[in-house]
Length: 123
Image (cartoon, rainbow, N blue to C red):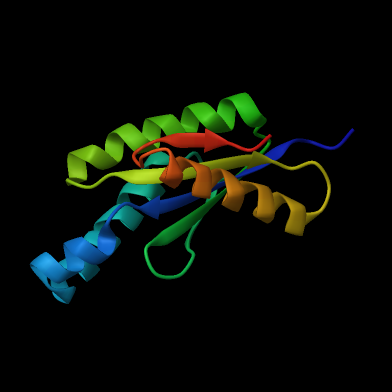
């Protein structure tokens, strides 16, 4: 059958406030730091990209829902060392890329709504 893969969406919590309080150069520096952190943390073959604003997307090949959740949780904890928190939405591919993105985005929204600094998994 098809090999599983998962999508993780990450949104930095309260990034606008960080920018307002510390200035845009500091915000840009933080985004670069987060990008470097993500690239350093993922496995070979995983894809990391900035998804506009303060959002990042991670495409995890050959990764089912449980493993993707564990990866996102590890990243969430690691972000705190950079002085910021993040909310994560995780979805496993079930056929249809738009469906995958929509489900990951809904999970991300749920993580935000539940109080941020957490990982939520798509149903």
